[in-house]
Length: 533
Image 1 (cartoon, rainbow, N blue to C red):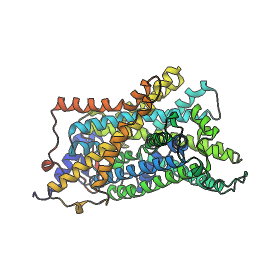
Image 2: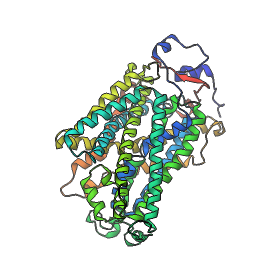
Image 3: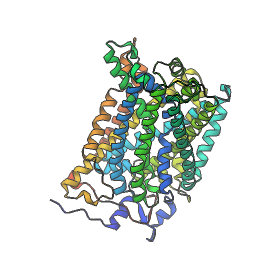
Image 4: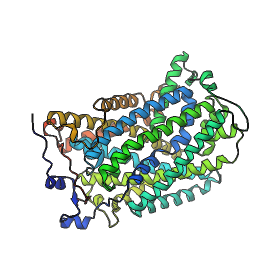
C-alpha cells in the first residue's frame, strides 16, 4: 500500500496556476492577470440559487403537472431532486478538497482521462453559451405580457443583452451583489406564492373552495398520456416525461464549480454552499410542485390551453392560473415581473459560467491561450467577449418561424447537456474515490465528507444514463415518426463522443491509472489563481 500523497506547496502552485498572495508572482502571470477572490459565502449560495430558480419553476412546472398529474409530478421532482443532491455532494467533496482546480473540467482530466475533461469542458461550454441567449429571449417574451407588439422584441433583446454583458464586465464583486439581490427577490416571491397556494387550497380565497387533496384522489396520474393503452402504461410514461422537465428546472446547480476560483475562503464558503443550496432549492421546488398539484387539476382547460400556446410569459404559469381561478386579481403582473427578473438573472449567470468554463479550458491548454487572459478586475475579458457574441443568437427569435424552430432546438438541448454533465461528475468522483483506496489515502483528510459515498455517485451515474437513453421516447409515439424531436433528444451524445475520441486520438491520451492518479490538493491558503499564459 502506497504512502499518502505529498502535499507540497511548490508542486501545488505549479500545477494549478494558483499563487499565494505573499509569494513572488512570475512575470508572465503579472501580465496575464489573476482571478479575484471577492465572492462572499452569502453571495455564492445566492448565485447558485439564482441560476436554478427561474422559468423552470414558474413555467415548466405547469407542463409537468399536465403530463404527470399531481402525484407523478411530485414523484418526478423528488427523484430528480435526489439525483441532483447526490451529484452536488459528489462535486462538493472534490470541490472543497481542491477549490483551486478548474472545477469538474479539471477533475475529469485528472481523475479519468484528459480526453474526458476536454469533452466535458466543451460540452458544458456549449450548453451554457446556448442557454444564455435562451434566457434573454425568455425575458423578451415575458415583456410581451405588457407589450404585445412583436416588432419591439429586438429592442428588448438588445437591452437585456447589453445589460447582462455590462454586469459581467463590472467584475465579480458587483456581479455577486447583483445576483444576491435578484435571488433574494425570487425566493421571497416563491415563499409568498406558496403561502397564497396554501390559502387557496384551504378555502381562504374569494371562491371559498376548499380543495384539500381532491385532485390527488380524482386524477393522481395522467391516464391519457398520448392516448396510450392501457392506462397503467400511460401513467408511467406521463410520470417519465416529468423527469426531463425536472432536469431542466434543476439544471445549473453544477455551475457552482465555476465559482471556486473567485470565492473568498473557498473551503468554508463552498462547503456551506453545497450543504445549504441543495436543501433550499429542493424544498422550494418540492413544496411548489406539491401545492400546485393540490390547487390545480391536471386537466384544467386553462392549464392545457396555456401549455398548448406556449406563450412563455406569466399567463402560462400554474401560479397565475391558480390565482385567476381562485378570483384573486393583480398578482399576475407581479409574477410576470419576477419571471422577467429571473430570466435576466439566469442569463447573467449563464454568461458568467460559460466565460469561466472557457477560461478553465484555456488554463488546461484545451482552448486557445488568449482565453485565459484576465484583466485588472479579474474578468477573463477575451472569454467573455467571445461568449457575448453568442448572445446574438437571441435575435433568431425575431426571424421567420424556421429560425424560431431552430432556436427552440437549441433551448431543448440544454436539458440533455445537464444530464451528461451530472453523469460526468459522478464518474470523476467514482474514479477519485477508488484512487484514494488504492493509494491508501484516508477520506478523513477531506474538509467536506459526505455520508452518501460511494453509492451516491453510482446512483447519479446510472440514473442519468437511463434518463438520457430514454429521453427521446416520445418521438417513437407519434405518427409519422417525429425525427426532429429525436434529433433534439440525442444530439448532445454524438457531440460528446466526437469530442472525446477526437481529442483522445489526437493527443494519444490514456485512462489515468488509479495508482498514479494525482489525488493531492493544489489549493494554497490565502491565494489567488493567476492565468498560466
